[in-house]
Length: 251
Ligand SMILES: [Mg+2]
Image: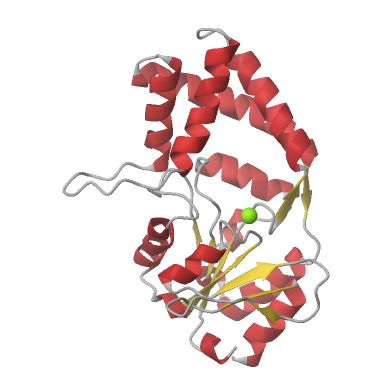
């Protein structure tokens, strides 16, 4: 915990950390609705394939192309979708812009706020200030849809100084590039922040960028150190109150 003395900025994940979801019904409902809406463009099979491609290619490791301007996740999604559904990019962008926001609000019933998340945020806001709080959600959705999910968790987006979303980020979790880009955008050294998330696969790799990580596990009272690789920042798992206690102890 001594390695947290320089932390002055909290990066916090949204899905599964501040906002819970019943994953299977959510996925099935989302697929059913998107396929229904998109099947006019070449049938349900092509629609399903397009959705799957956007999901998998957007999450793929970013290609490092030297000298070429990087593409935001939002544009990458349009490109992938355009190719998979067989529509010109401008038209594909229109279709996505119309379809996804029309489906999203009906998915609210699959989501629920996470216990203890509010108490933690209240504390963090006082301790680190608005500018010391970043919503580090996997940036696959545009800002309006991130804000919609924040509302479902009963969290005011204004509480955060920065939000990572598809319009400003160029890669996704769990890639090193995503975490390095946050540091670059916020002008922070890795040891000056810590990431709080729920997912070992998606959030833990932030340690490779040098960012200490807390994995939130409901119920677990004491903080437990996770086995870490030598070259990486430390990581722990524990409840929100335990994480708060650890951060308080070094301030
Ligand atoms: Mg998560």
